[in-house]
Length: 308
Image (tube, rainbow, N blue to C red):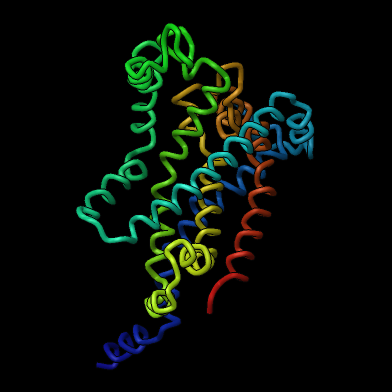
């Protein structure tokens, strides 16, 4: 009986239960995040390669070599540009869609289900589908534009029947941004939808009593109240996209002429394909201070704007 009472006492202790629930997360952070990060830092200060992992210390030599690399600077700017432009559209579309999904209309559950599919689908499988959509000969997008008279002889988009989406620098960047926005908007929408659903109903009822319009309620009440959640959504999306290489790897392999090559892909090509683990680790760690600063700023914004 004493043992049973002792177990019940422990399970009634909120601190013990909270610690118990945090153990899996703690182990995940240590084994799958902390250990690879420490290993990457160790590699970046060494001369490690695929054939030699002795970790001989070389100081900041890898970082100096990486920064002197003109291609690395171009890749870094590509990553920043693609991420920022994508985020603008993700924030815009997710706010619009979250607002729509808070309204009552027929078959709302079905449209929610369809909308979440891009995020729930494995990214490699989804991007392979887009690879066909942007095909240089059999693109359904080009076919639709031809049928609409927007592409082809004497049309505004050019005389050819194909736009060669992944073969031209500007169109290749547009294609990558489009797929990233298509993939990440559902998750951002779900996060914002949870924030909008958590707004106290008495506040919204009061705005109706006061005769506030839909737009005024949205801009003056709803959006300011979900600003902390929006900041967290942006932070999560930026971190995920900054290190992503799958979309670019499948669509363009970084081409044409490195116009879409991003940091994650370049580090993979140098560190894994090229065998230079030290250089690849140094490239990836260049993004760490930026993402850390962004995380601190976003968390600060979320903390200061939180409604208590």
